[in-house]
Length: 397
Image (cartoon, rainbow, N blue to C red; front, side):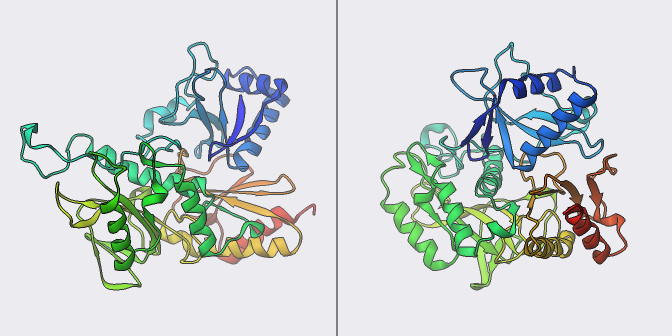
């Protein structure tokens, strides 16, 4: 078993003692201090925004994430979607999601996409001899292709670290987009066609024409449908239009708007759009599907789950900066893929203190029976919430 970053980079292999502890945790044979030790170890790996990769197979690494059940406050391991299955005799082959959660949970809205695997975000055009009128995109698998665009955006947010905030990790907008472009280089649109080669991180007519010119001249797509990506921070997506501060009329798109969390949100939004001809043989390129994730501000692309989070989230960012000035480093992370409770924010300090919070007015599920989880809705004001969080991390300093 290994610890890996969400980019796939190896952190380290587990020691034999850690391996034994983890196997005991999965097989539910631990009790007392050993169970507490396992939970503390898993919380540290989770707080570091890392995953586990199993060595049970030689040809591929099954990947597991450490999840927190928001209803019970307990940790469990779950196999990541779209990654390799464990070997039949592997103790980690069982999906360790709790029985009640397994029965109630719906299919996850998005899955982590592995790097270096062709994305195939858009189906090829029908050929005239397919038995149906030519010119349209394939209907088979279209919903899956749409969903992969949202999965890609969320994967890039995770892999580039936009869902993590700490004062010493603070970056300006240029650096944040540079990280996104760097991650995009690991994701091929098709075999040997890196997404970064056909990605523009600005949505305006000039950059759309630049991308169109590159796509029309490209030979790497072969017989496949040519397509690229446009990524930008926009004001809103309304109807079939994307609006930003560079166009009053907005930009039309002909497909679907995929949004994170099941609810539409106000801007700013980090939006990823597919750009391609709508019909076979056409030289007219347009936006096809658009996926969006709300972000804290135009200068800070930290993901926001609901609009109501914005004010307390900004207060948390300010508080983290203040604590850093006092010598206490606190890191805040939001899981955007693989977690069952997307409103959860996990705060960890360099003094090994861990606090999970929900900023929603009506959090998802009842409060877990654990000391390290708090709901903003249970506090009388934003100021009392700030004081509690500050006290939690500053005590015993």
